[in-house]
Length: 106
Image (tube, rainbow, N blue to C red):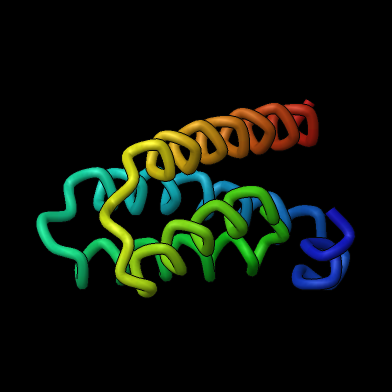
């Protein structure tokens, strides 16, 4: 949260809007990751999700996306467990965001 507060200049409204956008975008990119039909596309979507996660301080999602990206870049085959781990981390992050934003609105 400290990282995100710095990125949003301490503005809770801006922070919540960034979080809502990330929650939506992470779901879109997770779908693209799951539906990728080539390694280059998969790498592109992993990289985008990783960068967005880093931008808001979602370190778990960032690290899992980086692990999958690094493995593919080193020539390893697609590991379905990596994708499952990313999906679980995205779901956890989305749930956290939904709880945080709804608490802020109350």
